[in-house]
Image (cartoon, rainbow, N blue to C red; front, side):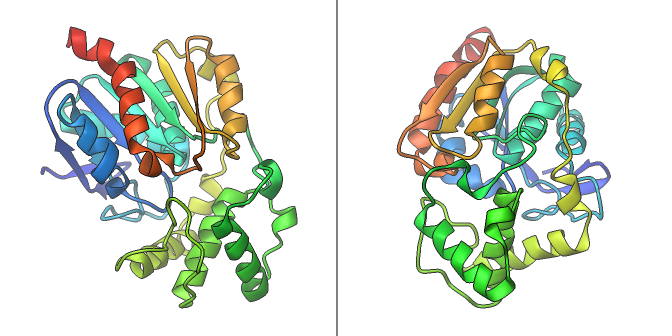
Length: 290
């Protein structure tokens, strides 16, 4: 695979399948393998799927800065230029969805469709608190309890709880603590690479401008509302990100909102078949005219 860069940082990327172009963007503290076994494999027979590791993730370089959703959104367009992709459908999960949204705002003519999967949009949801949902998962309860004891985290006053959970889980794993609880997808919780992934995430947090840049507000409400392409919004019911999803649905009357029952934030892994079916139906018009 030819080399590619985002904002000057070397990026690990790959393509699979044939057909109209589809770009998938993973969220924080994961990598392009997030899509492998389920969503990407289920769509490669219909689309040419492009996957990449965000800067500081997986096998991509870790530059000192350039981690805002807006910067990475421009980076998606830059990567498409280098990969020879003129126009694509764009789908992102979590922070990857925020990057995808910024790419669509920056270069709307480059994208036929936009899919946002449990994406928090900082402009619409500047804070995320522990009790934005009524019930914590078993993993969240354990991480909160152990990290409060080990590191003194104050969860009740935390205003960026999603990022703090990832940090706490990584610090516990790096310290050799293996949590007993498991969710549908457990960050740094499973497999031989868990320790390495936790250490990589902590290097990103401790050695770059990423923690501050992750929370920058991004595109304005007016710019979001002006998006011209079809939009799919998929959100886990009772997700902390649902606040963003409902506001996006109001701003984008052309959007289709899908609530995913009995699922958490990482439903693209736990309910991959549902995501594949929804994306296939959403993107079929593009396939028909390609």
